[in-house]
View 1 (cartoon, helix red, strand yellow):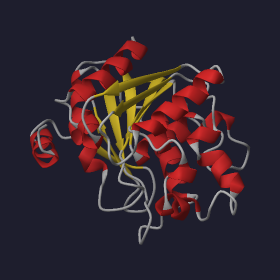
View 2 (view 1 turned 90 degrees about the vertical axis):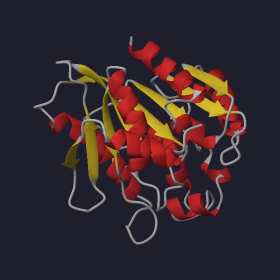
View 3 (view 1 turned 135 degrees about the vertical axis):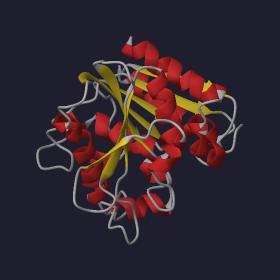
View 4 (view 1 turned 90 degrees about the horizontal axis):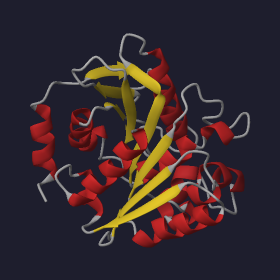
Length: 262
C-alpha cells in the first residue's frame, strides 16, 4: 500500500479544491473538489476519522476526494470540531457535520445534484456518516434534526457502529456512558438507529486491528433483520487500506458507491 503521506502529497498536485466556510470556528470549513465536466454531479460528502480527536484532519481524505472526482462525483471534504481544545463533543461535533452537509444547499454557483448525495465516512467518520444519514428521523430539537439536505445513501468504511463498545473516547464524545446519557446514545449510536431509510454500504477490511470487522458484521445482521437495505463487503487489508485509492479495499467501496449512484 502506498504511504498515506505520499498519497496526500500527490493529491496536492491536482487541481486545488475550493474552500468554503460553514461557520465562524476555524474548524468549520469544507473543501469542494469538482469534476471539470459541466454536471450536475452526484455529491459525496466525505467525513474523516481519527477517533473524533486531533491530530487527523480532512487532509487524510484528500486522495479519496481526488479519486471520487475522477469517477464523476463532486467531493465535499468536511472538517469539524473534535474533542479537546477545539470544543467538540456533544452536540458540537454533530452540529458541525449537520451544518456542513446543509451548507451544500447554499452552493448555488456549482453544478451539484443534491438529489444524489452519498455520505462517505471512514472509522469515526463512518459513525458520523451513519448518524447523518438518519437525520430525517431524529426527534425535533435533537442536534441535526430537520435537515435541509438529505442523503440518498451512506458508505461507511471500517465504521464505529456501536458507541457503547467504542471505549473511553466515545464516552467523552457523548459526555457520559449509555446509562448516564441514554438519550444521546439513542440519537447518535448507529446500532441503535437501525433501520435507516437509505441504502447502507459497509466495507470493512478483515485484518482491521483498529475497528474490528465484527462491528460491521453485527450492524449488518441487525439491519437486515430489521428490513434495511444494507450491503456488507469484507476485503483484505487493514484499517487504512480503505482510504488508499490504489487499494483493492477502496475499489470495492467505490464499486458499491458508483453502482448505487448509477
